[in-house]
Image 1 (cartoon, rainbow over the protein chains, first blue to last red):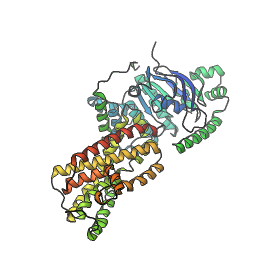
Image 2: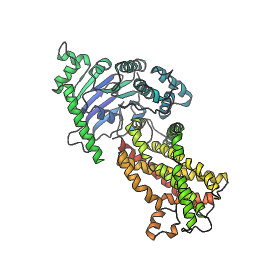
Image 3: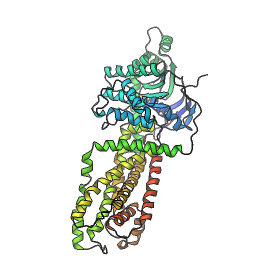
Image 4: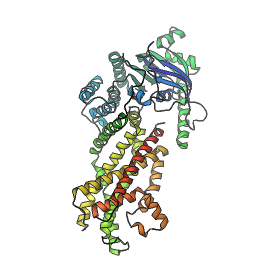
Length: 271
Length: 269
């Protein structure tokens, strides 16, 4: 049997000062190797927290998480060698050129010196940034920065690409550009992609499997087509979410944002 | 499809230190490249130490209030101001790491197989390089004021190493506080609280011998004292405990890198 890319069993995570409710509350999840897996849900559903446990930024407080069979609690460094990660914020060094930004990550991922220049060029070309590679990243548009971040994540040839809200804040054209690149990367390299989003359209377009999260728990999981078909012939993922969570995504999103803000503000005050 | 072994590969004992060095080098290169785009900071860093030397130094040299033995007060003060500028450059360096956290850059680097200690060591290196910029301006000014500074390139090189170690330690102290404080505002507060006590409880402005006993005790556990002692010995030629000074600076920087690296994870939780 093929080792799953990610296996999460009984994951519970609470933030200090997070007023009672767990950010992730008994989550069980399996991401098969080679698939594009989307964690969906409103703000505050626990998607990003789950992702940050998988990518070793947060400790496993309760439960077990493995990446390609490696326990993230015991083998964090080895797990990091398998990951490429793009966070929610647009985060590149604006004072460096696009090429230098990618070279930097090539070094951090131990790309051998003899292959480094070629791998950097390849990653930049894959993201359609080759012509802009020698411009300062600070002059890039939001969509270009996001693609540059994908190039940074790609240059280490990750087995698991983790994308946290990859298109949030991007205009529709830039969003399409990111989707195209993710599809192309997956087709060329066969890597596993784990992404979070609260755009149902994005999940429908990109994902083989989606898991709907609500208040830290798994509300439903399956292929978008299967989840919709189970509900009815004209059902959308939005309808699926409403059916399983018992609440409208937009309304839940507002509530979620309030919860997250309150929880984070409290946590920061308490340090 | 990418195939991945489930069992973690075994590392030889040389791999962790080699990885630490490789990653520190990679991150230090990025810090240097960033610095190349920010010349103004290097210049503005020299204003305050110049004022200390030109105003405070000249006035206190005239009133002869501080006993400095066979060397003039300006000569005595110059290494103290160099050390002070390294302290002032580095003590708010934790703000940079909080900025990197808020911008998502720290998070991204921490998801790579990079030891936490390499991330802070590179920042400490950057603080050291920034700490050198006042040296380049201050020594010629001190020469113009009649201070006899060594022309021995080895001694100047050793002084530069001492400044980098001192600035590196104070940057680590600041990053450790950043790991505990978590926000820029709190870090600024801690920095303000620490800076002047570290400065006044050292031999930067006056000899330890004229301090009250309790302050002498504090000054002996203050790494700034050892930085000043090393700089005086190397640049002015006053008696110094160079072996002890460099041992303390190296030890303090190594401990600082380890502790602030260990606290770095708190920043992204």
